[in-house]
View (cartoon, one colour):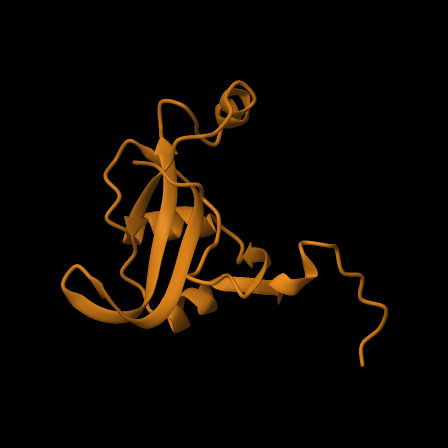
Length: 132
């Protein structure tokens, strides 16, 4: 069974966007090396889920951190992934758990920006006029 790669919680009270800059070097490749990802996959993103203690591999944790990856046959750093993505409606990906603390993950990031807005706005864009 597949599911869309979209952030979702039980009630989706706040929804939005995320932007991450990694430090110089292959941020996703570094995470992929630390994950349970076997050879033959190419990392394309990450997923972070937090909540009441989750059970991941029999261990109780507050955060589930995963690398999202595609089969290396359909894409890689050479641009073939973009060529492939242009020909399909959705890109099939797999999720691989990463053994890393949230604090350590944040230390690998140069910049992190998260904007989440109240669902009562009905998805309307919000324009910030000035800082209060």
